[in-house]
Image (cartoon, rainbow, N blue to C red; front, top):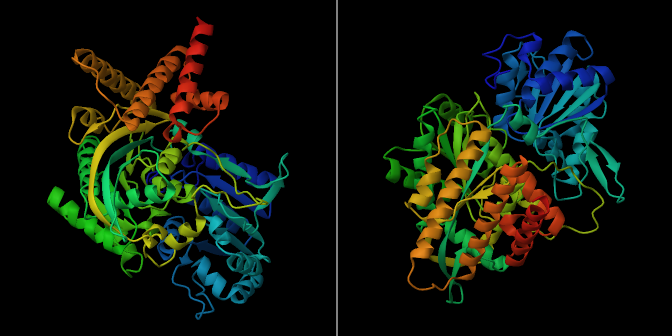
Length: 576
């Protein structure tokens, strides 16, 4: 079924559903559960599945009423509009003070915050009639114990409960209401979904777009409160504080890094528009001030204004809809817009926030993967920060919500920051508590991450090395993208070797250059092994990690990469 549902598919026919949606419905009506958790990657069609299920339950008189619970005000209206197209009338303007719902409505759409404010009211509504509760992005019900308790109190009497999530994993240990947890062999309880449809299968089915991550490094210089000037190269190994400050300097509108990256993203958008004339781009900013500054940059780069969407703007939903229906190039939004916003024409993104949770990252990338036809690709530009490189390299990893963790994972990934990002408070990130002044920030092209592999040898802004990847066509099948990336990689490595052989004298290299050379060598060997065995790049990288240990390539040390180079050469010699 086309992602533009329901305009392009006849309602009520098996052919109008995607295979996963049909399978999930068959599973539901086979088991007839009271609670059902469906986990599907962003862009796969969770809303379509839920509304088809709701329509069936209403028609069979299993339920008489419907309550949709969402994280944001915008999503309430989005649900109501989608439901109206299939003959279900939902009131998105219902408030706790209103109490009753008009007789013309089948139900209401409310936020988790609304339920938490008066759970007894919603429990009473749920008890009065047989009710189906649809909890969209249900992981938000675990944002705090008080929210979880309120959701349990309000919806415990429901006849049926359908929980939906694209990214159910969290790094806290607050249990999500009405989600079943199973104890694993290690004694730790993990969430159990009744049906799962991940990014990998969705990509294979052509349901979502493949994503190329365009990583940019660069030189940063800043002054601390004590007056000390510090210089660092983004992407090099640094302390946690230095990494946070270098990252912040890169995103600072006063520096050139973000301007150069937005300009590169606009070039990519122009290329994609050759095959997708209405393709749009979005900058995800950390706060209001940054969003406005980035919009000003975009006008200077393109000569056209950008739509600015701020979470506390009462016209935010209207602006999002207008942008979605237009052919405008750029949207600037604060972090809150990353979840649940349905603008299928978004194909280019700039990740200009220092929020680093895997949950938020997956949700943000989910804004760009909603395919409308086969061959569409997405491109997300981001700073070469190890945390983000790790998330990008593991897009297809399935995660569940884990309870019983003895202590919080010390990985710098904090769901409290995500909760803050999704509230109507777009203040500064926690890293901004460390006062400093950006002195200089300039960008360099680092590499491309795609399907678990890394491509490119780096290059200056505007260099041939960068243009090779910015100019990749926007309408390609995933295997064509991989083949073209391999070709560009091979050409760049060959050119680099030729330049090296032509040099009259050996040249001193920095630690970062040595690491980049090792990555290039490893990726070349992985490409050759992939061609030889037929295994995708990502599978080969995963097997190397399992054999040698250590993190993803983006976060691996020089020693880690050398071990993997030795291991893949060992495999090649054995096979020979």
